[in-house]
Length: 305
Image 1: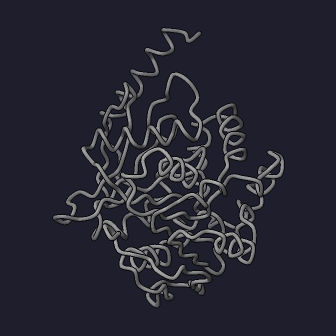
Image 2: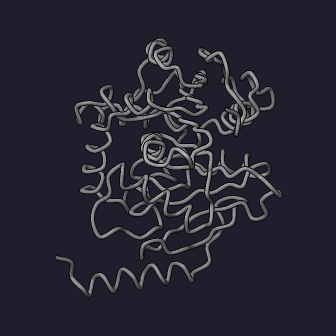
């Protein structure tokens, strides 16, 4: 049973945080709302273009939406962009009970309800991808397109000790500045919550849900991601679905592609949204190369039958 004094102190702390100005982490506006009695922190395009398609970015486990901002900001000039901290993560408040993947999918839907948004394209990284797949399972009419970046969960990340080892290896492959972004989020999330969420994630039927998708879907993987099987294995899975699926590889990227390779990823997302072949972005610095390894025969535009 929760200590009522601690609960009040926690609520007071969140209210103080809401009143305390912080230096914005990106060009996106920082905002708060309340969903199902939980304070939810999110970022949003300050002035979305008139009639812009809505695009919401969903973070990985233990993290907030902060590390997604490099990619989200690059897309905010064209899309009505939202980057929430899901309940229990980042600066948002915690739910009374621990949330699993289906709970987070429902929470994402209720956040959109609160914002008055009926349909959306979802962009997820790591745990955010199973949340998108579960969202598609429960709310197929609300999901226009899906972008799955480094999708985690399923048999490749089992058992739990294997997933922990994969995550540890990935830490050495991410940019060093990711440490300063991720460490406060992990500390805030806490060890018990990390273990529970990681177990739920590794047991989630990611492959089954992916094969059941019926909307245009972009899957983006990095060649240095230890949490993902190799590109050939991913390609073999991709050809098993008759969904409108596009599979893209970014050479040299690890797991947190939204943070480490925002230019390449944003470029690929723009081309996907416009039903164009994925080509490398000459304006993105570095030696990363982006290319398709699978495209289904037809990727229809949004609203097409």
